[in-house]
Image 1 (tube, rainbow, N blue to C red):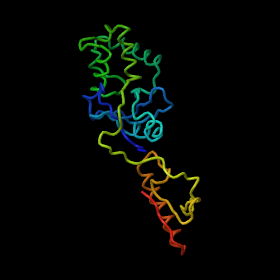
Image 2: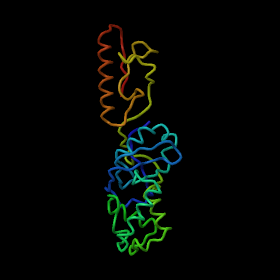
Image 3: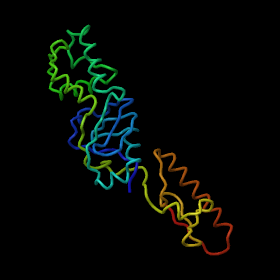
Image 4: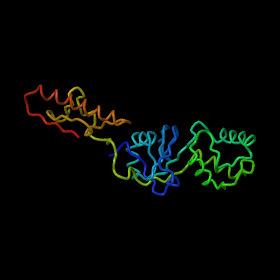
Length: 229
């Protein structure tokens, strides 16, 4: 099954922000023990970036079981809780009360992302910090800490980098890559149940297992077979 893929969010509330990135955010799959923190990139089809790709690697099997349909919850400010963020906003309101909320992004967030999240929270373009009601501030906090994105599928153009699953490593002699069940049959590459959270790991795994299998096969006289992807 696929691994290292992006999230397709056809009805994304962020669809007007392709190319906007956040250096560190936390992406979580609602209702699952799946989350990862790192750079996030908003695309015209949904979400990408290292945090999403690595999350898809750790959760490849579970996401496959869910038919790649879930709710992704994005915290754009992973260092904050609701309480600490509320306190920070309250402190900001004092000296910056006359500033427009949507025009003054906080905590290093990109201007376009901040404006979109503020608008989704119902904050008008003329609302100033000292006029912001508690209800709208709470909505803004929710958007900053738990933007909900309905994921419906994976990488739009089927450009998954690697696969997970395959021949169990328990059935393989890792010194020779020979099957413990079928003598003379060797495996290499992604046909094995081995994958990592970077493309480089998977390339290296394919080269290394191929080398081990080839060297082992060259040292025996009996007919051998190599199976690999």
